[in-house]
Image (cartoon, rainbow, N blue to C red; front, side):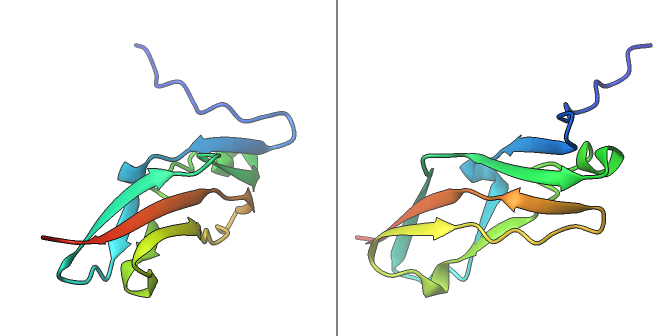
Length: 104
């Protein structure tokens, strides 16, 4: 039987994970406002560590979220805060743009 291909881990034990806006939860939305997310210049998070652990990390498993209650009206650029895991560290993260507008 075909087994699922494990995620590609680089020789140095690092791995780039592609993030989409669908992977990010917007918490604390304020009523009367709408929020439009888009990815910044880079949409990858790099993790590094034990390859067996790194290969299991996904954008969903990172549980990415943004606290919308801290955003201001207009355009916001947020650098995602990604905590290290038990067997991997987060080498670099990415930015997300959130446009906050009043709902009509």
